[in-house]
Length: 131
Image 1 (cartoon, rainbow, N blue to C red):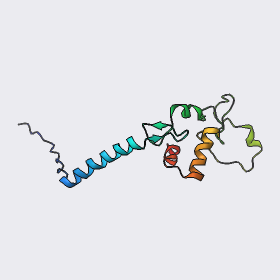
Image 2 (image 1 turned 90 degrees about the vertical axis):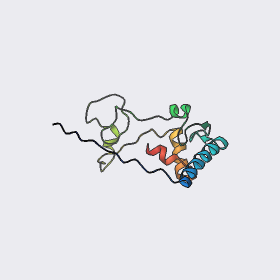
Image 3 (image 1 turned 45 degrees about the vertical axis):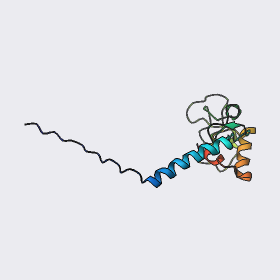
Image 4 (image 1 turned 90 degrees about the horizontal axis):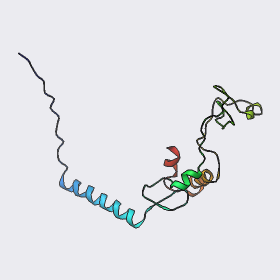
C-alpha cells in the first residue's frame, strides 16, 4: 500500500470590497498623476517613464569608477598593477585609511546629483545614489 501526502495551501481570503476599491482608486490616481506630472530625469529634468533615475544621455555623462583601481583609496589607476595595487597619493596621506570607495568620479553630472541631495532636497536622488 502506498501512502501519498498532499500539500494543501491555504487560499487567501478575498479582500474586503472597500479595500479592493481603495486599491483600484489609488492605482488609477497614480496613473493619472504620472500623466499630468511626468517623472523627470534627476540630471537634466527631461520627462521619463521610470521615476527617480537618469535618462540615457545623463547616465553616459556620469563617469563610473571601474577597475583597475587602488586597493585602499578606490581611485582609478592608469593601468592594472595586479592585486594590492596602490595609488601614488597614498605616500602623501598619513595616517593611511583602511579602505575607501566611491562609485563615480566627481564630475559635472555627479556634482549636480550631490548638490541636489545636499542643498535642494530633490526627491529620489538618495534612492538613485544608494543603488
